[in-house]
Image (cartoon, rainbow, N blue to C red; front, side, top):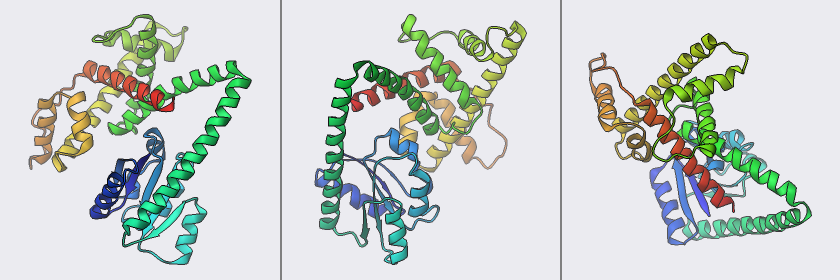
Length: 314
């Protein structure tokens, strides 16, 4: 069972994580200190079974967070808070939470509630497995089509998740990166590669031709290639700024540790961190990013996430 904990009190998050681990309830797969850091599609992608969320948080409270994620997250929600107002508790239940636990945290109550939620999930999963088995027996062809669609979709989900983790989701180059990912995935089917990928020129040419269609002139294709490359470069530099800021604030930040050294050369990240820390507003030097390395790592990481998603769904 995979848990995500959202609470602005670090001590509470630590206690809940400890209870989950000590009682062998599952894995604490993520946490956040505010509701604004909780996104439904990310919870869904991480396959979070149970979200533990505080009601009162400084940025975005638990009720507003549930409203925002309910259309994207299908897991169970348990709310934990000091609030005892019946109206607020009632509103939380109306939004679909499973239980409302009052603070201060009682270990026995937490374990009992989470065990009940786990049992409900396991029962629902068992019913779902039976229904899936019957469906497969009724129509094998339809099952194969659904499976293929899911696998294709999972690569897109992996790419979208990575863009979010890299701080690139809102950038114009995000769409170009997804187009590059799709091209590389299809290209590898006919020409498998591990250490090397097609040249940047080949990648941008193919992506531009796919976007503009067969009727496009070479001038139009060249213009789109250059524009796409510039959008991606700006998005990568934005990602570099994002990780340099994380590293400056907390060098042990999990995202910084996981992604910064994979996607960027350390001297480049270090330079950007020094820039941020410097009182001088002028950059120490223009940031140089290795675009081909970034694209290659993005493709490999998306493939790895895609395979992980497939394995978990089996």
